[in-house]
Image (cartoon, rainbow, N blue to C red; front, side, top):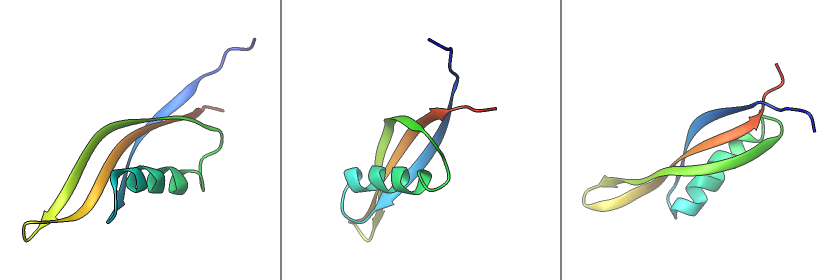
Length: 69
């Protein structure tokens, strides 16, 4: 088996509906410009609040993809 190297980046996705959709939005956007995405790790979940109400959900994730060079 050949050795591989993976790069890890951090992304923050947002959604007005849920943390799950926020994380999915980050992956969807990343997949447009990055190839061979492998693993996503949710690092932090938080919310933006306005006037005492949840304005948006935010998911900070680490995404790994195969490093080609």
